Length: 368
Ligand SMILES: *Cc1c(COP(=O)(O)O)cnc(C)c1O
Image 1 (cartoon, helix red, strand yellow):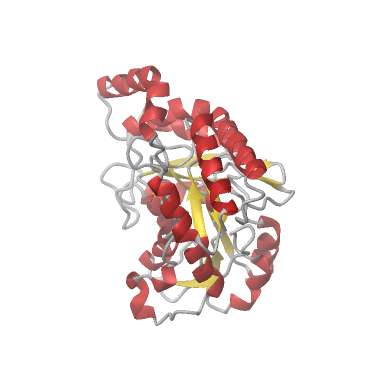
Image 2 (image 1 turned 90 degrees about the vertical axis):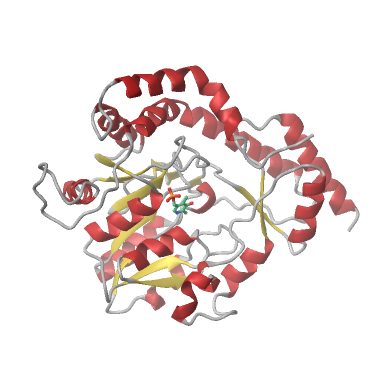
């Protein structure tokens, strides 16, 4: 038996008829940039996230980057960011000419530790980017308190958190702007690259709408030096279909997570911790273990695909070598990078596969 880490083909098959009808209609529409399909999706996703505005863009990195640009963040500015995120969060800051200022996460929830943010704030700090890592909301209230105290913007990286709730409210507009990715492997994934921002601030929505389209609202009139980062209408058509099943698919993920958690308690693995106020959407099911590499190998031999999110923290990537970071500087992120393992989880993962994974992990534990 082969268990892929995530089976995107199976996800496609489940919605094949609806997706193909929607894509064909979009192809036949004669409108290939922006247009109705994009606008409809923006309205539907804004409604889903309980926000006023959604602006579709080309991908998640651009969503973060254009949001920072809309906030007037640039050269000389500092932006607080988790040490243990996907590198895109850092790159968006660097692309603006600003400096990422890393803050460590809790090693239980994997999300930024608000108690460590204040010490990282300087006169140059302009914004904080909490990341809702692995589909679980970061603790936003204390971050908002700090942002208000120091006059900072909050940009949420929600690339892994479509549908998650913080204290009962959907992720979507707690911060000034929320950035989304619809990369195929995300909980709400397109069939190519796609992204969006959501916000309740009409001025921010307007700025991003202009920035994504060459700095232009009226054709050939350019207010700003913008970008070409529009959401493709074919992807919007796909996303409209997939948005309809997002809650159902998230519920399936939640059931798998609960099943893993109940069945893996005796394995010695550190299982996910969910704060009482968090309703995660289980983009990933991540365990921690000092013998991570051996366990990954054992699962691999049995045909089970696992991944590591992420094996090298951004500060130790060659991309940031010139910044002068050193090994040991962010010990929590570094330890997590060596100990986390993501088990297969997805709306099409069946029980036989999950049971196989559980059996192997329990079996491994008895041999220790
Ligand atoms: C996927 C992801 C991004 C980037 O999204 P793309 O659409 O691939 O550009 C940013 N941040 C996080 C946390 C992500 O998981």
